[in-house]
Amino acid sequence: MSLPKVTFSEDQAAAFDSIAQMLKTAGVDLEDDALLKLPGQGESGVMAVIGKAGSGKTLLLAELYKALAETGVQFVSGDYESRKSKDKRSLAILAPTNKAASVLRLRGVPATTIHRILYTPVYDPEYERIAEWLAGNDDRPEIEGLTDEALDRAAAFYANNKSIPGALAAAGLRGSDFITGWKRRDEPLDIGFVDEASMLDDRQFEDLKEIFPTLLLFGDPAQLAPVNQSGSMVFDALPEPRKLILHRVHRQEADNPILDLAHALADPAMGFEDFERLVEQTARKDDRVVWGQRVEVDLMARSPVLVWRNATRIRLIQAFRQVHGAPETELLEGEPLICDGIELPLKHRKKRLDLEARGLIKGAQVIYLGPGRKPGFSRLHVMGAEDPQVSAASIVQIEKPDEEEPFIPFAARMGATFLHGAAVTIHKAQGSQWDTVQVFAPDLYAAARMGRTEAGQPLWKRLAYVAITRAQERLIWVVRNRLSKPSHPLRVHDLRAVSAAKLTLEAEET
Image (cartoon, rainbow, N blue to C red; front, side, top):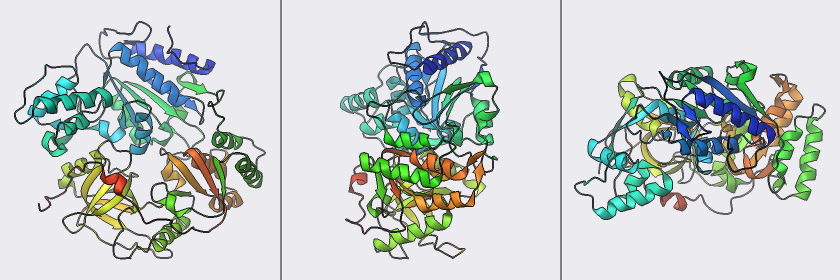
């Protein structure tokens, strides 16, 4: 087999070969860059690639994507699904959250969220002709109201970004022009890759197995298991031959002190005090690790402080709002929020799909851009979403210390519900990454003092591992319960540069 033009470790090469064999059963031959004819639908089951941070899971996924692209596999991105040919195999690359999917897209992998693959957009037939032309399945169309220059802009955009909605936006169209609704997927696909599979719960896993006869999971066994799953992950129950283990044998070109700290937690003799000394020593030698004497408030607007306890989260949020002078009765432009779900009656199922398809799924990080044109509506920027700006009916809840009921500065009668996002629990941070991450160490010390364990490991170590590995460039290990003063007001000017998509539960006044 001709392996991709990268230097694989021995375990990566062995995993690539095992996956290639599984894909051959599904009708894709990576060795000959060919699609195979099957007597029926390929049925090769589930396989998992398991490894800790830095073991090369994402590199392997990206190289598998490139190899599959050369065979002519049809990619399903979630924003548009071309008419399927019986001679082609389909592939979708998924992540549990917008943020996790955006990490893959930055590496050139056309990833989407699990939710966007469960529900598919319905295109206006006129504009569907443009989508089919861009996808290479039809001739260049003539569309009334669109000039040749507009179509050229769409083609140029798609050549670089492989996004149908983005290409249509480049032609001067809005989402409300070409997407008429959303529907539950009624036809299965062939192959699914799922990143951050440690976040999957049993129900999501069953849904994915219904859609994909061939499913490849990429997961980190050292992360925190989903809530209510007794510390287990969906790939734990797979037979051993179906679990491909990647060991940490490669390092980045510049040794990564953040990964070194994460892997130091595997030492059974490492106690919390020992680990903090190691963090402090590392911070003296490398500015990518910071021994923080306070929480840096300027970072909290885009990169939440990671905590263990809800009480700590609420206190930090209140402190963030107070130092910015946020009034109780309203939000400031630039305040971060976390989507906590959708509150809609069953008869508004289509509206729920519209909201979720735009990225407002539970756990999504958004930035408040200001009020909408009707009471209770908000203009929002969904972090990591491909079409990030929406206008939606919102129910915003601000929790307060020692108060059971949250304060609600404003609310629509129904819509997307939000909690404040200046601080989040480490559990909710799984699947996300930020350039700089602040970890509130006093909370982890409290977990260490309690002596709790999860899946045979001290809980504080699992929490620390997940929190540390959320940092891409810089880790701030905050050791004191103090907050800095802001150096500037909250900002949104960089987000406003992105064109907004209209998304409402009921028509706003124009």
